[in-house]
Amino acid sequence: MTYSQEDRTIALAGIFQAASLVKDIAWHGKSNQAAVESSIESLLQFDVPDVISIYGNITGIVHGLRVLQNQLDNHSPERNADVTRYVVTLVHLQKKLTKNPEMLTGISDKLEQIKSQLEYFDLSHPNTISKIAEVYKTTISTMQPKIIVEGEQVYLSNNDNADKIRALLLAGIRASLLWQQTGGSRLQLLFSRKKYLSVAKELSNKI
Image: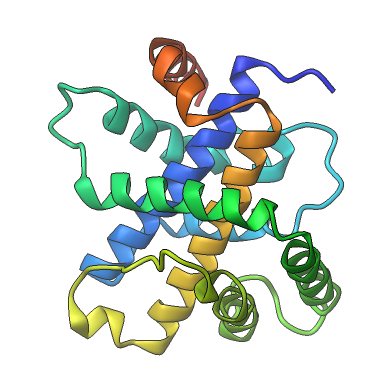
């Protein structure tokens, strides 16, 4: 399949969306709920006709598109060091995961099992989030480097927040894998920064 710059931009926005939501929960105990649900739901999309369908539609990734613009724009006052650090680490861990097909298959199998049980608990139910978080804990969390999430301890020590953060980090790994599959890479981003910014703005303006 041939992928476009729009596909790569959507996938990269998926990484930034997950990273930004993790930052928001860690520091404020809350985040854009619609974006959280879209990112987590992306983990359970296995057979989709195109890249955007992983997030439902543009609305499901608009938060990430806006964060991407802020982070890639050197003059933006909204650039955030935590988001940058999470994105870089997620991409690095995803590359290591790709070299471990056994773990990759195990994650996929566990997520498919969770999806099959959604008739009992919907996607936003704490039980579902907890199961997805457990997948992260038993797989990605065992790899190096570990993602150290910084924030207010009162929010980080809350079990529901901790589960949501782990689920979102797994969604970030999934988005990074998608980005690689569509032809994205750190080197490619270096030379196509303006293209990503331009396409992100165009997509955001469709909302």
